[in-house]
Image 1: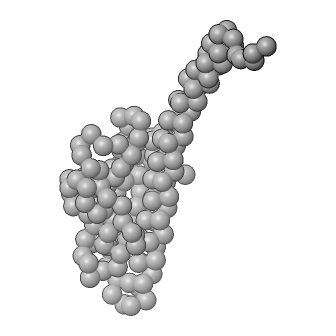
Image 2: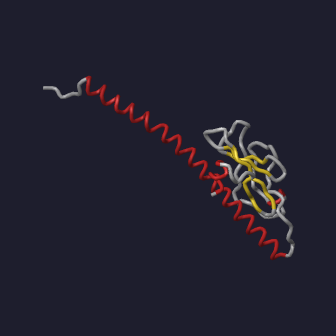
Image 3: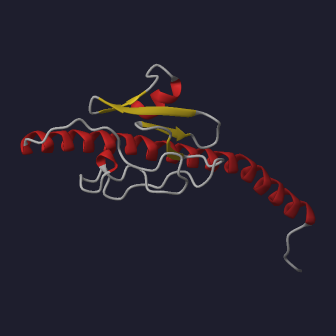
Length: 154
């Protein structure tokens, strides 16, 4: 007597695997989007910590001047962003390993410098954005009551 799977058993197994795959793939996609949002949230926290440290260094050195911007090229694609305070390499680094700005106009899950002291984050998986500004030695969300700001600010 031969032992083998029947055609019905094989079809049933393939159907179960297909159903499991249909459920799992969207979950993995959402997990990736969540991970990029967490990365952006940690970038915001790191920038705020770096600003606080730089302000204290300037006060202790007696050369205090307010921080005007966090470096990066305005509108520049795939360039280092958040590299030097006031965009001057004579000043300290904002982030030791600065991220790069968006690779293109359609990129998501990335930062862009949009003005002299403004930066925008493009959320992954949607068309949502959130703007931050550097003023009074702070890196704050332009619209603190927005739901996008809440995702990165708290």
